[in-house]
Length: 86
Image 1 (spheres, one colour):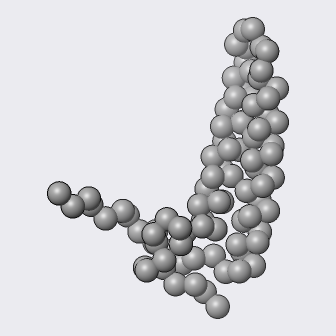
Image 2: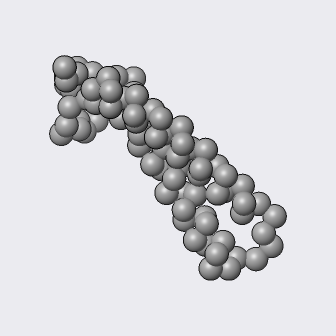
C-alpha cells in the first residue's frame, strides 16, 4: 500500500532574510515557552493564572515549532514543489 502524499503548502519557501528572522523568532518563542512552562512546575492547584500560563506556554511552543518548520521545509520533503524566492 502506498502512503498518500502529504499536503503541500500553498506558499513559497521563505527568503534567506526571512529564514534568519524565523530562526530568531523560533529561538525566542522556544525560550519563552519553556520559561512559562517552568513557572507551572510545583503548582499544587489549577487556578485561572495557571491555566492562562499553560495556554501561553503551549502557544509559544507551537509558534516556535511553526517557525522552525517553515525554515526547514526542505527536510520535510517539500523542496520538490516549493521554490526558493530570490
